[in-house]
Length: 55
Image (tube, rainbow, N blue to C red):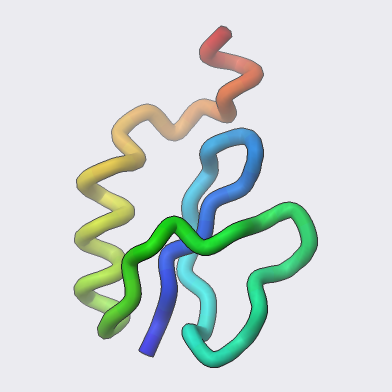
């Protein structure tokens, strides 16, 4: 099981669901298989530039 995590720059990643996210990251709310989580990341992270670069 994986969890989708996101940081303050709105960059997404996968993290093992049983572990706390690393410093600077928080759970986005999606948990599931690797494929399910990757599909969620592809759905929501359409602009790969960090938030600071998009402003």
